[in-house]
Structure formats: C-alpha cells, structure tokens
Image (cartoon, rainbow, N blue to C red; front, top):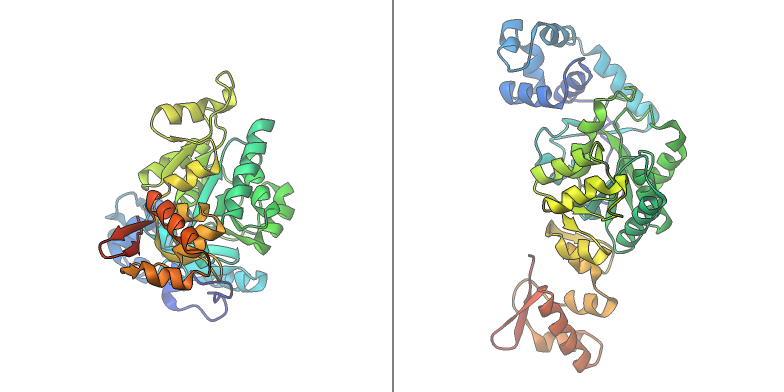
Amino acid sequence: MQDGNQESATETKPDPEQLALLQLNLTPGLGPRLQSLLLNAFGSAQEIFAASGSELLRVEGIGPKASVQITRGRPMEEATREWEACRATGTQLIFRSSPLYPASLRETHDPPPVLYIRGDLREQDVLAVGIVGARQCTHYGRAQAARFAGQLAQAGVTIISGLARGIDAAAHRGALEAHGRTIAVCAPGLAQIYPPEHRGLADEIIHSGAILTESPLHRTALRGLFPQRNRIIAGLSLGVLIVEATRQSGALHTARHAMEQGRDVFALPGRIDSPASVGCHDLIRDGAILVRSVEDILESLGPSVRPVNVDEKTVVTVARELNLNDQERTVLNLIDFAPTAIDTILAAADMEFSRVLSTLTVLEVRKLVRRLPGSFVERTNH
C-alpha cells in the first residue's frame, strides 16, 4: 500500500492477465474458494480460460455448469465493459499481484484476486482494528462501538467495519467524528451501496479512508456475500472487536475468520441477561480477550508487519506504541533497533536528563526497549 496518491489500476489499458482475472470474478457460480482452486490448478487466469472443458472438470468443485460458464467468458467482453465502467466511476482495481494490495489480506485463505476500491489505502492502514457487531443493537452497544472506534482512531489506528446498520455504522461514525481513518468492506458492488441509507456515510468514508469490495460493480446484496465479506474485514485487521452479538449474529463469522487467520479476537461484555451480548460472553468464555478499555486492545496487539509511519513524527512497530504519551513517544523514536548509547539519547532529547531516564524505565517496563551492557538500549519489535 502506498500513502495518499496511489496509482489506479484503471488508469491504463489492462494487461491480458488482469482482464482474465476480472472475467473470472464476473463468471457466475465462481466464488472466492473456486477461484482460488482454479488459479492454483492452472497458475493464471489466462490459462483457466484457455483450458478445455475436460481439464476444467478435473478441478475440485468445478462441474459442467461452471465449465460452460468459464468457456463462455473467453471473449472477455464482460471484463472489458467492467474495466471501462470502473474508469468511468473512478473505481480503482487492485489485483493480488500489485504492490498496492494489502499484504495482510494476501496472506489469508482465498484472498480476493481483485479488489474494487474508492478512496485510498495508506501505509498506516496496516495498524487496523475491525469493529463489528449486531445490526439490531442496543443503545449501549452503539455508544461503545463509537467510543472505542473514536479512541482507537485518535491513537492512529484505522477502523475496519462492514457498513452495515447498527454496530458497524456506529464504528465508522466514531472514527469519522474523531477525524481518523476508517475502511468499509462492502458485500455487494460499489455501485450498489447497501443498505441504501448509508450512501451518505459511504461518501464520508471515501474522504477519510476507503470503501472496498471483491464484488463486481453492479452485484446486488445477495445473502451469501456477507459471510464472504467478513473474512476480508478480519484479513485487513490486526485484531477484531465484537461489540454485541447474539448466537446467530454474522459478527461471530468475523470472529471465526479472525481466529483462523491468527488475529486477536476481542469481545466487549454486556449485561449478563442481555440477549444482545450472549455471543460476546460465549467468545470470552472460549478464550477471546475481554475488553474494558482501548488500552486492553493496544496492549494485546502484536507487532505490525513492518515499521509504519503514522504521521511525520511517529514511527510505530508495535501497536501498543500508539498508547504512549508525547514524551514517551519522543524518547522511543530516538532509539534504534541496533544498540543506541543512552548518552546519545540524552543529548538529542531536548528535555531534562531525569525525565529521559525515567521515560526509558517506563519504556523498558512496557517491553518496548531493552537495556544492554555498557549504557546502551535498543528498541524491540515484539
């Protein structure tokens, strides 16, 4: 991902493989799993469309109907129209092979071969937390979703959610009100914003982050798309917070995807007699992290993929660094990952020596730095 002015995949003519990937995504009956199986079997989308019917039928899950649909797509007419429609609407297409494709999502099971995006993805979005929950939520759930999203956004964390009614919308709005970044992962195509009353919210998100989907532009909000969407929310996040969920809630699918992908799962407790919180209580019983404050989340998150520039002054390698005050952050950013002399830090810190030394002790207790023999320290990334 690049910061701000990333290139759009729709600014130039598609290469043959990109066009074939688009056609594959447009082929009826081919969900994320079957697309992955086909790409693994043939090595490229072009080879899939060049394959004979008998070769296609050898792939697990590909029956006669799917084989016929693939064969019908060989002229790439639908893909060409889709490409032009994306150009006309300012929709970016980011393919899995692109350096702009989110690395954390690429590493998951069945990552989307292509993402449709409006807005922009930035390097700092690697530090992201998903916040999801029930559509039919309580006032408590809505307020807590907005509070956690706002506080995380103020700390520099990008909020990922699904643009749905209830908890999702509250999380997006909490991040926006805190002037932070938020990304909405949509189930249908970006020309079919769902629910319709969230079109205005989607426009706000585009200006403070991005809306994205794996669905073609005009695909409508089919029921089966929402569980598929949830794996992308988890895949873009370091961890996922479930705010309210019944035992039938789709938010539990997001929690399951997060567990499978090795992400942290956080759950907010509610009243023990509230049906809206039963799913969260089950998660806590089964090992999810009980959350009381934003600090619980930041302290639990592991290291980011690489050092991330959250702003001009702040370089973050571990999410809990976002919880530091200005003095702690200033001192931490004077310390290298190689041994750094304490005298060098004292000379560069522009504050009283006693404050620098006490701050180093705090950073050591928080396991963000380690002391070395000979009056040296070094920064840690775990």
